[in-house]
Image 1 (cartoon, rainbow, N blue to C red):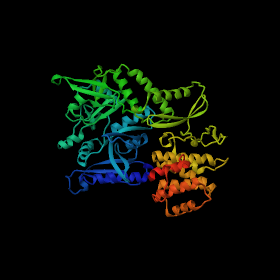
Image 2 (tube, rainbow, N blue to C red; image 1 turned 60 degrees about the horizontal axis):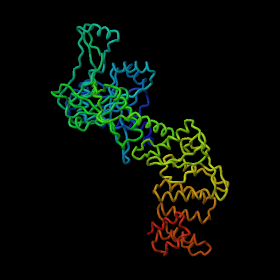
Image 3 (cartoon, rainbow, N blue to C red; image 1 turned 135 degrees about the vertical axis):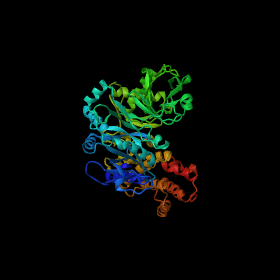
Image 4 (cartoon, rainbow, N blue to C red; image 1 turned 180 degrees about the vertical axis):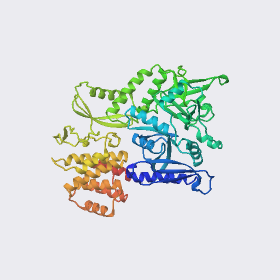
Length: 588
C-alpha cells in the first residue's frame, strides 16, 4: 500500500502524527519544516520550564532538540523496540551541526483505507554519534539498523526529554584520556543523575539508555559510556529481552513469575525457556525444553533449529543484559535433533531454490512429498536421471506447483524468468504443437498453484495474437479455467477465462460456442442481463443451431429464471463433460 503514496505524502503523515502527539503537551512545542527538500534536520522541539496548561513564553524555553522525521511503510512487529535504517552521512551532519539529533521514525500502515501511525524515537548524543560513525567507517558501512523505542503517552515522553536535555551538548573524553582514566581510576567519579518526578515517570525511564559522565582532576565533566536503566530481573511483570549470542534476540511479552516458572517463556513455537529462582533467592536455574510443534513453518523451524543448536553448544545466554548460566539438562529428549535438523535444512534449501511457499506448516507435509522434493533438488544439484521432458503437477503441503522435468534440470515454469521459452509437445487432434505459451501448460487446480503468476499470465493473454490454428488450444484452456473456478470460486481464475474468451471472439465474433462461453462466464460473474436473456431465447427458437447449443441456452436462461425450461438431467448427457453443466447444479 506504501506505493500508493509519494515520499512527500509519507513525510506529511509522519509530521502530522507528531504534531498531534505534542499538541497534548504544554511543555513541548514542535516546529517542523514540511516538504523540505534540503538536507539536514526537519525542525526543532522547544522544551519549556512550565506546568501543563500554562502559556508558553520565549524566556521559559529550557532547551531545543533538533529533530529528524521519517515515515515508513516497512512492516514491523509492533514491539516496544523496532530496528530502523539510518545513514552515515546523516550522522556526520548531526555531529558537525548541533552535536545531537532526536530522530523520529513513524511506522505507517493502511487499515480499511485509513493510515494508522505509530511513532518511534532514538536520541543520538555526541558520544553515540562518534562511536557509531567510527564503527561504521571501520566496517565500511554506509547505513545501519538502529533500535528505536515506541513512544508512550506524552507525560512519559516528557519525562524522557527532561532527562535527555543534559545530553544535548556533550564533551566527549578522548580515547587517550579514557585509557589514562582506566589505568589510574583513583579520583575519577563516573555517574548519571536522573530526574524522577513521580512513579509514572520512573516507569517510562525503564529500558532507556543514558550517557555516563566522568569527573576527575581533568576538570570538565566528560561523556565516557552509557547505561540502561533496568527493572529488577524478577519483578512480577516484565518484558524479557533474551539474547542467544549473535544468533538471535527474542522479545518475550510481560511474563508473570508463574508463567516463567511453570509454563515457560515461549522462545519459538517449539522452544520454551524456564527461569526458576532457587531457595532463599540465592540464585536461579535456567533450563529449556524442545518439543517439535507442527504449527511451525518450514521457515520458522530454521530459526528454532539455530537457537536450539546454540543452546546445545553454549553455556550462557543473556536475559535483559544479564549473563545467565544454562542448565544443559534439556527437559525433553533431543537425541534425534541433529538428524532431523540436517534433513530440514535440505528441505528448506530445496524450497528456496524452487521459489516455493516457505510459510507452509510442517503438519501439512507428508514424507512422500519430502522425498519427491529432494529427488527434484538432487537433479538440480547435478544428478543425471533418465527422465523424459514432461510436465509435473506437484503437491506439497497445502499448495501445488508445476515443474518441467528434463534430463539435467527441473524448471519452475512460472518463476521470475517467466519469458523463458520452455515448451512441451502438446497434442491436439493428432497434431503436435511445440510452441505453446508456457502458462497454458498449467491446467489442473490453477487456484492452488503457488508458482502461477496470475498478473503475468493476464498480461500474456492480453498481448496474445492467435496464430497457427491455436483457437482450439485456447478454447480448451478457457473451459479448464471455468471448471477450475467452479471448484474454488477464485475470481482471478474466471478473469483469465474472460480474457481468453474476449481474444477468441475478437478473431471470430459469430462463433456460437464462444458466445455461449461468454454468457456462462457472465452468469458466474454477475448474472445475465435482460438483453442476454432475449438473445438466448432467440437461439432456443432457432432450429439452425444444434441440440447442444439449445440445451446450453436453456441452462443459461434458467440461471436467471429458474424453471423457465424443464430440464431432466438424463437429457443433458451431451453437455455433461463441459463446465456449462455445472450451472445445472447451481440452479437446483
